[in-house]
Length: 199
Length: 95
Length: 234
Image (cartoon, rainbow over all chains, first blue to last red; front, side, top):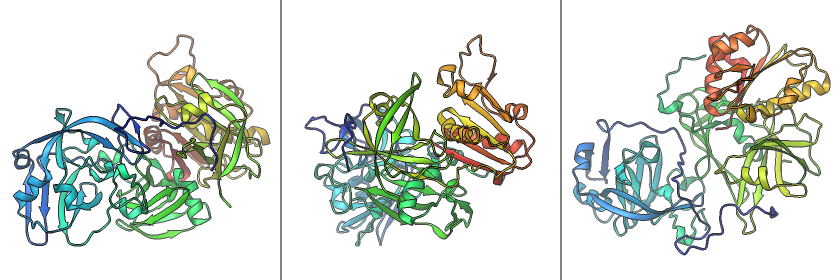
């Protein structure tokens, strides 16, 4: 490795709101690991389940649930962060309550339209802010940003905030998702710079 | 040319093609792979690596079947080391 | 063995307002084949690295040259197009890619379709042909937005025997003195300028949308899918 004189990347911002190794953007980059699934709201459904119970909401049922709004910074493992993003949706804690799933399952698997998956401890979904978001900046969430609905877990790198969410399954044994099984960190806390396995 | 049965979403232009993986795959396999033929583990379609759909605007590099969109290979280059994660692939024949 | 090699910029050539050719000296470099690309890596003082692929613009056996089109919100291309100068050190890996390549005396004729900076690897093929005096007929259709985006304009215009070069402008403001083609590359344009689909290989390079449209148009003209090689750069 040798330093390229004059190349600074996009970094060098000392803002204390930026986790280590991040730079700030004002636009909203669109990242995707595959084709964008187009899901109409009249065929959309969200399922929450464990090994005992299963609950599915249609779009109308889902959007009738209590709405929670958050304004938060988001951080992508590809080094960009965006400040003060405004989201609205249904808190994951509400969904788990409504579904009546067991409250002692340690892990969650998140699965999506298009086949994407991610995994995270249930405590990251219920003890912190975590939404299934359907609104961004006051407007319906655009499909390239994960609409009709995406997970939002802003205290972890954004690959955990799965776009086009289709379901959450609570399990006893952790199972790495799409990126977690390809060398990315299993937890992904940006403040600890948990980018890759072993960080 | 085969009939196009893809959905509008699958015809999106967010991808490039397997040529973009030539460097990383050459490191992983020790030979040029863009001329190799891959059989998709989901739909059995056979195609050159050069013809696959590759997504680079994401944490790693994702190579997908051009016929059905299944994830065939996920490549990462983390701190200078190539990671090769074979997902839905039945066979690879070298040219 | 493929590995990162230290490279030094030896020359920069302004191609257009937004594109720059960089000539690189790479000790130990093996020469490339026409159409191949290299991976290029930049490292910031804090260790942050950015890697991109660039097609080789120069002919095989000539010094390694890449042409960089500046993407304004890009991270690497503004550095290469605007900041890098003779003496700048970068790292390169390659040459790579064995599919999108042309070798002399392998095919009856060659059709090249370029969209935007997709001209770069095709220019390497054309330069290779001219340098060797290879007689293979070449037909190039090159789509650019505006005249000031045309790369290698004078060089492309200096055709030698057996070369057919057509440039089509796709932008809204076509200058009144433009006497070339206008409009996107579609089946009608190609029918006007390409030979009947018999024998030979076709190379298509450009943004994904261009490549998809061009390949579909070639199919309309009866070009067989196995004779078409494509490279998309997003």
